[in-house]
Image (cartoon, rainbow, N blue to C red; front, side, top):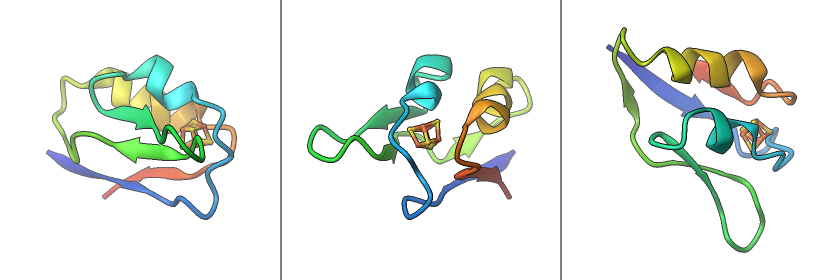
Length: 63
Ligand code: SF4
């Protein structure tokens, strides 16, 4: 189990995370920045690892 950490200061609002792992990520309606819907990610949540890799701003990490 890992905890998702999103750095909203780095987020560029591309929405890639919400497209890749919509159960865990959404975008703020006002500023477009990432919202973490579910902070815990299990080993089977491969789409979360994909979202971390695909984020163009390097704003996501797993602890
Ligand atoms: S993929 Fe990265 S830059 Fe794009 S909305 Fe998600 S956290 Fe922000």
